[in-house]
Image (cartoon, rainbow, N blue to C red; front, top):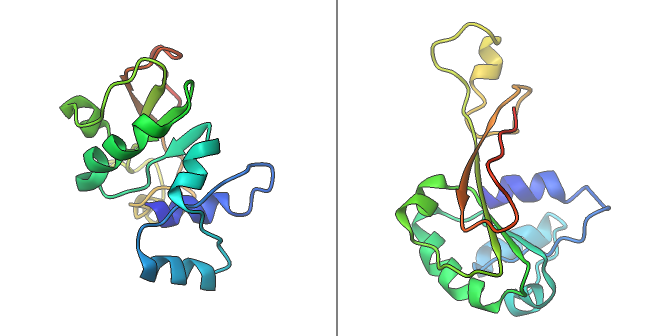
Length: 147
Protein backbone atom coordinates (compact mmCIF):
# COMPACT_ATOMS: atom_id res chain seq x y z
CA UNK A 1 0.00 0.00 0.00
CA UNK A 2 2.91 2.35 0.67
CA UNK A 3 3.94 2.11 -2.97
CA UNK A 4 0.45 3.07 -4.14
CA UNK A 5 0.32 6.01 -1.73
CA UNK A 6 3.75 7.17 -2.90
CA UNK A 7 2.69 6.91 -6.55
CA UNK A 8 -0.31 9.12 -5.84
CA UNK A 9 1.48 11.72 -3.68
CA UNK A 10 4.89 12.13 -5.30
CA UNK A 11 3.57 14.34 -8.09
CA UNK A 12 1.76 16.78 -5.77
CA UNK A 13 4.27 19.57 -5.07
CA UNK A 14 1.83 21.43 -2.82
CA UNK A 15 2.54 18.88 -0.06
CA UNK A 16 5.77 18.36 1.89
CA UNK A 17 6.01 14.56 2.05
CA UNK A 18 8.75 12.51 3.69
CA UNK A 19 8.87 8.91 2.48
CA UNK A 20 10.19 6.54 5.15
CA UNK A 21 11.21 3.00 4.21
CA UNK A 22 12.74 0.38 6.53
CA UNK A 23 13.99 -1.99 3.81
CA UNK A 24 17.36 -1.18 2.24
CA UNK A 25 16.33 -3.01 -0.93
CA UNK A 26 13.10 -1.01 -1.19
CA UNK A 27 14.99 2.29 -0.52
CA UNK A 28 17.23 1.48 -3.50
CA UNK A 29 14.19 0.76 -5.68
CA UNK A 30 12.59 4.03 -4.60
CA UNK A 31 15.79 5.97 -5.38
CA UNK A 32 15.90 4.39 -8.83
CA UNK A 33 12.31 5.56 -9.32
CA UNK A 34 13.27 9.11 -8.29
CA UNK A 35 11.74 9.00 -4.79
CA UNK A 36 13.96 10.34 -2.01
CA UNK A 37 13.55 8.61 1.34
CA UNK A 38 13.99 10.26 4.73
CA UNK A 39 15.31 8.70 7.96
CA UNK A 40 12.40 8.02 10.31
CA UNK A 41 13.70 10.17 13.20
CA UNK A 42 14.10 13.16 10.88
CA UNK A 43 10.59 12.73 9.46
CA UNK A 44 8.94 12.22 12.85
CA UNK A 45 10.57 15.38 14.20
CA UNK A 46 8.63 17.61 11.80
CA UNK A 47 5.52 15.68 10.78
CA UNK A 48 1.95 16.82 11.26
CA UNK A 49 0.45 13.63 9.86
CA UNK A 50 1.60 10.05 9.37
CA UNK A 51 0.07 7.71 6.79
CA UNK A 52 0.64 4.07 7.72
CA UNK A 53 1.13 2.36 4.38
CA UNK A 54 2.44 -0.77 6.08
CA UNK A 55 1.47 -4.45 6.25
CA UNK A 56 -1.40 -5.01 8.70
CA UNK A 57 0.68 -7.41 10.79
CA UNK A 58 3.18 -4.61 11.57
CA UNK A 59 0.74 -1.86 12.58
CA UNK A 60 1.00 -2.55 16.32
CA UNK A 61 4.80 -2.73 16.34
CA UNK A 62 5.26 0.35 14.18
CA UNK A 63 2.72 2.53 16.01
CA UNK A 64 4.20 1.59 19.39
CA UNK A 65 7.55 2.82 18.06
CA UNK A 66 6.45 6.06 16.37
CA UNK A 67 3.44 7.36 18.35
CA UNK A 68 5.49 8.33 21.45
CA UNK A 69 7.78 10.38 19.17
CA UNK A 70 5.02 12.43 17.48
CA UNK A 71 4.40 16.08 18.27
CA UNK A 72 1.16 16.91 20.11
CA UNK A 73 -1.65 17.47 17.63
CA UNK A 74 -0.29 15.01 15.06
CA UNK A 75 -2.67 12.85 13.03
CA UNK A 76 -2.04 9.16 12.37
CA UNK A 77 -3.92 7.96 9.29
CA UNK A 78 -4.31 4.20 9.42
CA UNK A 79 -5.63 2.09 6.57
CA UNK A 80 -6.88 -0.87 8.61
CA UNK A 81 -10.05 -0.38 10.69
CA UNK A 82 -9.58 -3.84 12.19
CA UNK A 83 -6.33 -2.72 13.86
CA UNK A 84 -8.12 0.14 15.59
CA UNK A 85 -10.93 -2.16 16.68
CA UNK A 86 -8.45 -4.78 17.95
CA UNK A 87 -6.70 -2.15 20.08
CA UNK A 88 -3.19 -2.80 18.74
CA UNK A 89 -2.30 0.91 18.51
CA UNK A 90 -1.18 2.82 21.60
CA UNK A 91 -3.49 5.48 22.98
CA UNK A 92 -2.35 9.04 23.36
CA UNK A 93 -4.78 11.83 24.25
CA UNK A 94 -3.02 14.60 22.32
CA UNK A 95 -2.96 12.97 18.86
CA UNK A 96 -5.73 11.91 16.49
CA UNK A 97 -6.11 8.54 14.86
CA UNK A 98 -8.04 8.71 11.60
CA UNK A 99 -8.65 5.18 10.41
CA UNK A 100 -10.04 4.80 6.91
CA UNK A 101 -10.22 2.18 4.20
CA UNK A 102 -11.53 2.38 0.65
CA UNK A 103 -14.51 0.18 -0.02
CA UNK A 104 -13.68 -2.35 -2.70
CA UNK A 105 -15.83 -2.62 -5.82
CA UNK A 106 -19.10 -4.48 -5.42
CA UNK A 107 -18.92 -8.13 -6.43
CA UNK A 108 -22.58 -8.61 -7.35
CA UNK A 109 -23.60 -5.36 -8.99
CA UNK A 110 -23.84 -4.30 -12.59
CA UNK A 111 -23.71 -0.58 -11.88
CA UNK A 112 -20.12 -0.22 -13.13
CA UNK A 113 -18.35 -1.62 -16.20
CA UNK A 114 -16.43 -4.88 -15.65
CA UNK A 115 -13.07 -3.10 -15.97
CA UNK A 116 -13.91 -0.85 -13.01
CA UNK A 117 -14.88 -3.86 -10.89
CA UNK A 118 -11.37 -5.27 -11.22
CA UNK A 119 -9.83 -2.30 -9.37
CA UNK A 120 -9.09 -4.36 -6.24
CA UNK A 121 -6.34 -2.12 -4.97
CA UNK A 122 -8.01 1.29 -4.78
CA UNK A 123 -7.08 4.20 -6.98
CA UNK A 124 -5.67 2.16 -9.84
CA UNK A 125 -8.72 2.43 -12.10
CA UNK A 126 -11.58 4.82 -12.64
CA UNK A 127 -14.06 3.29 -10.22
CA UNK A 128 -15.59 5.71 -7.76
CA UNK A 129 -15.17 4.28 -4.28
CA UNK A 130 -16.58 5.14 -0.90
CA UNK A 131 -14.44 5.32 2.23
CA UNK A 132 -15.09 3.66 5.58
CA UNK A 133 -14.00 5.67 8.63
CA UNK A 134 -13.53 3.97 11.99
CA UNK A 135 -13.28 6.53 14.80
CA UNK A 136 -10.50 5.67 17.24
CA UNK A 137 -9.12 8.04 19.86
CA UNK A 138 -10.22 11.07 17.85
CA UNK A 139 -10.34 14.28 19.86
CA UNK A 140 -10.59 16.35 16.65
CA UNK A 141 -13.22 14.43 14.66
CA UNK A 142 -16.63 12.89 15.06
CA UNK A 143 -18.07 10.37 12.66
CA UNK A 144 -17.28 11.13 9.04
CA UNK A 145 -18.73 9.49 5.94
CA UNK A 146 -17.25 10.42 2.58
CA UNK A 147 -19.05 8.93 -0.45
